[in-house]
Length: 146
Image (cartoon, rainbow, N blue to C red; front, top):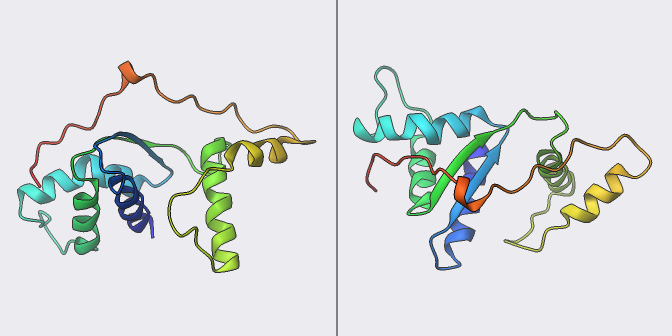
C-alpha cells in the first residue's frame, strides 16, 4: 500500500499540469530508500536486482513513472513518534480503513483543525515541522531516464 500512496499522490499532483518541487515525507524506509537508491540502480540493470527476484516491480515502475519530471526530495521520519504531519496521515489512513472510505482525490486539508483538536487538553505533539525554505530544497539527483 505504501507504493500505491506514491503513485496516487503523484498522479493527482500531475493532473494540475505543472512540474512541482515536492518534499515527500514518509515513515516508510521502503519507499524512501526505494525511490532514493534502489530505483536508479534497478533501472540501470533493466529493472533487475543483482541477485534474486525484484518484488513489486510493476508497482515500482508505476511509481517511477508517476513521479515523472517533478523534482522530489524523499525524507524519512520515524512513525508514531509525535511528528504532527505523520500522526495526521496515520489518523486519515486509520479512519479510511475503518470506514472503508476514500477521499476521491485531492481535497482541502483539515490538518490545522485536527491538530488543534488533538492538542486540546492533552500534552501537545511535537512542534509542526516547517515547510522547507525554497532555497534549501535539494531534489534527489535523477541519474536515470524515464
